[in-house]
Length: 215
Ligand SMILES: Cc1cc2nc3c(=O)[nH]c(=O)nc-3n(C[C@H](O)[C@H](O)[C@H](O)COP(=O)(O)O)c2cc1C
Image (cartoon, rainbow, N blue to C red; front, side, top):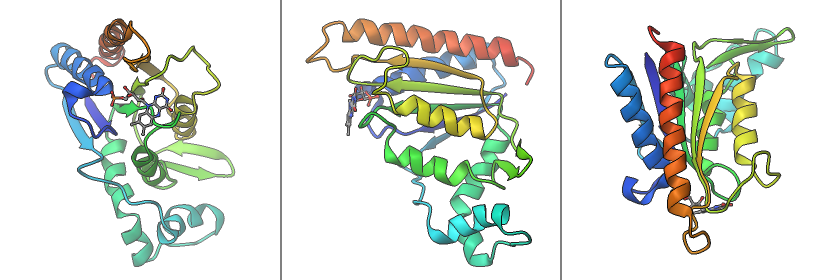
């Protein structure tokens, strides 16, 4: 089983709730799948460039302009997305470790998505719809937030943004472990909330193992 882990949190693990979810998720997954192949991408060590005009031309113009062949400059501008897309396309599972920042994901994750979830990189798109170029069967979100969020909370701009973008790329099977209420100055049950989310991360790993054993 090939697993791609994208980490969008710059904090050390012991200070990061979302990274602690990742530790449990991957420990459980590795225990159940000894032959697992994990690619870790720490976005703060390998930062994506913001999508620029040349990269947009290279990725998107072939969809709109028949016969448009990306130039060398356009391909160079999209090199990060193309390289990451190759790993993405060979993955069975994609795991995103995401702290909530300003009700959404850190900009560095959005920059990675703008590069990688592009036509001709991870999916093809034309008037008949989209066809995946990847074999990703499952998306896992390991999220942490300071405040408490009910399911479907209108303030949550993080999960709709990520889920809609991945659904466009043909990935709709998702599990979420969310440690909310991590503002310890505000919620005296923050630790209990983290423990419950760690349990959810463990369950998500067991579920993926059962669903994809042999992948
Ligand atoms: C720049 C920044 C913006 C934040 N914005 C929000 C927010 O909009 N809503 C929220 O509930 N918590 C917010 N927080 C709190 C974090 O989500 C919280 O501390 C969470 O535990 C961070 O995840 P981590 O522990 O994995 O780093 C913000 C924190 C930072 C640093």
